[in-house]
Image 1 (cartoon, rainbow, N blue to C red):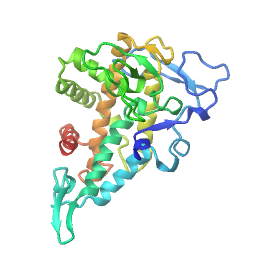
Image 2 (spheres, helix red, strand yellow):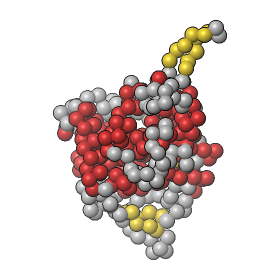
Image 3 (tube, rainbow, N blue to C red):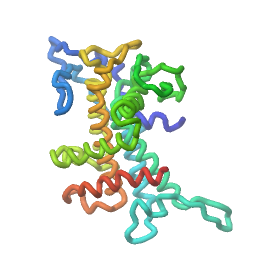
Image 4 (cartoon, one colour):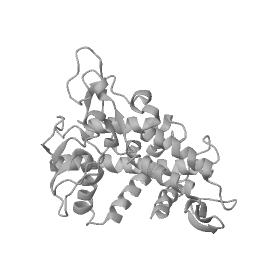
Length: 320
């Protein structure tokens, strides 16, 4: 489990006076900042106040580069360094990224493995950093220490501790696993006729709507995976979503250990899950375009939607 810390960004709320609870009461000392809802399809009343120091701070929260932000920068750089296309038009179909066994006088060896390994880690880490509870409070281990009641799934509702991998008893959930799997699984079951493909299509529709509205331009403002600046911004987005939507219930109260997550919690949080998945896919496509030399320059116009969606799908093909 050497890579476990690379899947998370733990904001050291234990080093912040008062921690980082999300409440609706504004401090008298003015040392607070307001997190307002900025989603057109969300709950207009979902806002809260947090301590002004509740930010992701790289030097404090990513010691020795060992967090998801550092992991993205590291493996983007490794992908660039180790991807040597087999042809002038090398892209994500290139055999170099698939890895293959080759026999030589020195025995069997893997060709292209460093590039494929970098692609696998990079794809995973970009997905992780867009899940709000993968970039959240270190004091509760990203919600893994907050046990909750989450009902509605007809399939075996077993969840797990994302830090230890320990499978929990049937019907037991922690807040992190609800956001990793539970909200998506319940949506697939209750809204998409138990079809994962239909749920995926709904996320692609969200990407198309983002292109029409211009939201996609905001997602693509910062897509340099090698620079820690862009992944740090993505982590900060997730941290704010964690405070506004994951750690707070639909009444604006803190979700505490033993809390019951209601149907309203599910219905008012699903749009956040879908939005973060869409943003992650778009940014992954852009990072890979840049890293593999398919984008000309950062100053060029944004990639066409078809190219973004194609880039989004290809990594999944490679890792299947």
